[in-house]
Length: 400
Image (tube, rainbow, N blue to C red):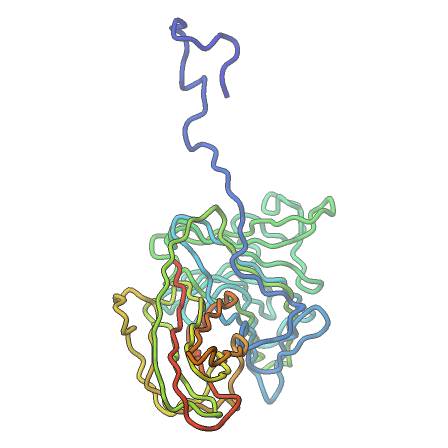
């Protein structure tokens, strides 16, 4: 703020810039822009979720439950986070745990994948916060040792908020990742404080020792249950969200592949399939457009995990570099969609117009491509069974 006790002019030799104005970059205005949101009012879907065991929707929550037949159960997002270096990243899960596990049962709630992540662990003995990387547990912290707020309701110096985390009636678990994935990892809880107002309180900060904080900054939101030798356990999951904090200016490019076939009949025929490169999973990829040219009436469908007779996934043939995040197949001859899922709708391509072929270009609704599944564009005739010819271009948008 400017010092108003003296006029600001060059003749005032006593003017001190350090006292008289705000330093550059001291105040940074940021906004939290939602990247991915999973609403608990939506049904379970292979387009959004991955699950195992007894997982179902109960009113406005998802219930994840183990049983003697299925001692392991989980609900996790199909997609990873979308962290961008230079920003702060936040994830959150609404969760309710009516009864804690018994004996050696375990619940894990948070941002994790295999050997890395940071999350809440609930056991019979209580609640712990865990940080794991490189396949090993780096830090496990009991509630009484949380370094920001123990959230035990005691109101003492270790519980400055006076709040108590309540899993039985439901809470919000949040985590934040900063400093390019090599800095602090923080876990927060949504609680009612001693004045009965809802607050999000920071409970613990990991990463005060040397070393890499996470193997990768883009993981999955997960709720995992293992009943062990104890009784059946269950958790109820509400909304889930992953967000960047800060205004971003993302870079993107359009990549794609093309194919022409002359043996299209009234059976679904695969044209182009795509899958993500495992070494570039941090790139955000989504369908962009499909262009088809044909002299006959066709249906175009986009399917998740159809059964293909043969595949050979390669770099795009249209000159893109190895930096592109997708692999394409144009070798498959037949497809079976009986066990697949319609990924992005089915569209009619009108055929002849004044004796010439007609071009159809369909701008697709943005839909993120799953990292470990195959998505296939197929076509079929709708007015005859004889073979016909069509050319198709599939475009994918990549962001980073």
